[in-house]
Image (cartoon, rainbow, N blue to C red):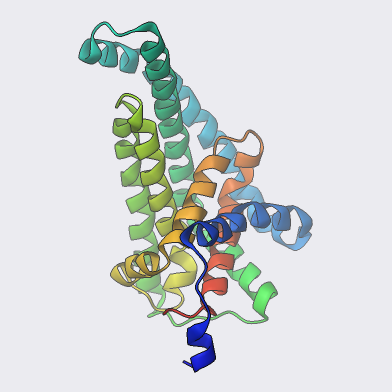
Length: 249
């Protein structure tokens, strides 16, 4: 690496996280402004809408049982603490229901989302980088990542049951799992297996965390969350393309 490039100070973690997070709303706006991507985004968006609604209803169904369980564990508590605990519990359980709906939508619409990401990469760079190890290997890697995010949802639900700190921990875990799953397509096309993709996220931890957190927070925004699955496919590709040109040291 040239000496003058080595001398450049690297941005702080907060600024890097904000840069990673920005790709999510930017991808949502880009999707709305690019009619050439709408056809591939339509089916994933419709499936996401149905499954998010189902996940929300599931969370509402489970909330009363969760409240009784927490009340037995904590016993009598001051009114303010009880109110805060109830609000945190609702946030955690309903958030877990939405996360489950999103996880299923991402898994079921994975082929279309991957085609959407490839279409965007061609539009953005003029070519598609593909260093994978064959279709069978790529499908297996994609399925593994999708199942990883789906398996992460029960832990989000369990963390949501913990008083006060539970929802924060659940959001952090969901953000990590979402970032790992959504960058699967472009990283697999660059020849990275599951272990190498985890190492990639460790190397770019602030950007990955910001990207995942933005995706989780957008999950709670009505109407925008319907387009979350296709927007995340584009945002993940944007993130990978940007970091490819960043110095690692």
